[in-house]
Image 1 (cartoon, each protein chain N blue to C red):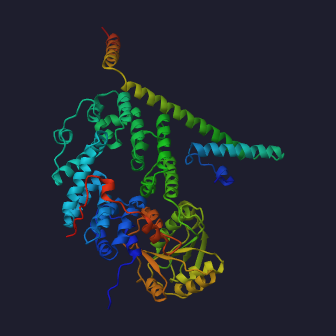
Image 2 (tube, chains in turn yellow, blue):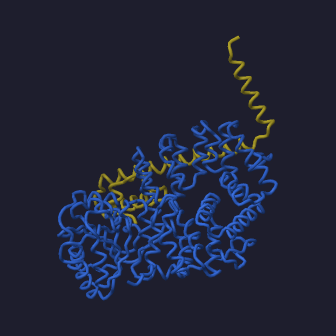
Image 3 (cartoon, rainbow over the protein chains, first blue to last red):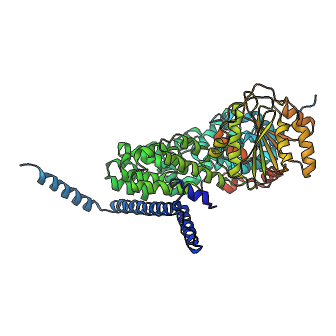
Length: 101
Length: 490
């Protein structure tokens, strides 16, 4: 269950992505309520909201990186021996071309 | 003097043992249970299969149950649970059965049926052979079961049929990193097998990623230190893979006892925090214990171990109970802490100045709850049981039970101390039922969730729950192997 202390003493390591998103939503809602009630928004709230958004973006990007690697790896397993041979041949040519005469 | 029978609670307490492969430790109580409470033991075996956390008990109890003459229904249930073991545990069960000279023919039929049913489904057999090659060889050899042609070729002749997963595993080290990673994921090669086949290449990012994907929750937890070295905190793709794997492990009931230990071994605080969080989620997954609970922690002289165990007990209960948890440290006087919803770290911070010293008055601890008018449904006492100072627990308990109109179950977690256990005797004299968990051999904090799982607010509800667990029939698990009504005891 979300509580204000959890947000104030934010630990970005423990929560999973869903929990981070929930906390970010809560921070945004609390921020809105401060403004609606014309109460000064505490500095910590903005800081935590920024940290949460940054962490969520980082984790999303991490997931994309992971998926890209997975897809490339899966594609490599689908290559035929001919394709693999062609790749090796190209690599060999590149290496020998760069060698000093 | 009349011989005293074994109680169901004593039998249940066996499940909380963690003998690390020494199955003989289950024999004294297990044999008595098989003779005196065969029906209860049969249901306990079935219950433990689903709820239990200790693999050794799943291997030992079905075998021990066969040491006494039993109804064929119970025999069938025991053998069915043997037949549900993985090959490694089945080898262990077979060896244990042989050492106890029990059910030799029935075990032979179970192993034969087990192997034949796996052989009849090539995909399943192949998966099992990848992971349990040595154990399968042992099963065929120890029980003289003739392997099928394919099993013989792969296990005993070392052949790797073209296009099989065995060929893929053998070729992993010759593939490019990316292709090897793809192969591990595509062919669902188990972590340990892939790790062994890859050799030094296993440190490459693509391969670490694939290995994380193939780790079981237990492997993830126990290999966190290695993953830390391989960059799960620094490489974005690995960070994501680890994060997702932790998410999967959170719903697992298997690695619970190991997660804290893994967390403590971490250098990186981030990973350590993540593992602690994982354990909290895993403990929640184990299921709840009803009611409000009181943990009475003995802080009298030489009881430092009880202080630490009480913190762990309260923290574990705090995660598992649906109600409130109250922690009271006592010597001559009590110190109260509301432990509801608190983690071990929070309790440690709050009680860091609690040190051992003074006399032992468990009644004083309970009295503090009475005075605060707190209503609890169960009491866990962590102590050596050396009650030596008034007020006595039994007296306060009687008054408390009368005031709240119910008898509350009492559990004694008996730790090593300098005093003899007078507490259990005092309670018995006062006709108060107490269930004793003997931790005098050392407190394995990581098995506490398993102990706590057996605690119930209603005195007989766990027994009822166990008795309601349906028994299995061997033919349900292995249609081709039956007990043929044979007497299997020696």
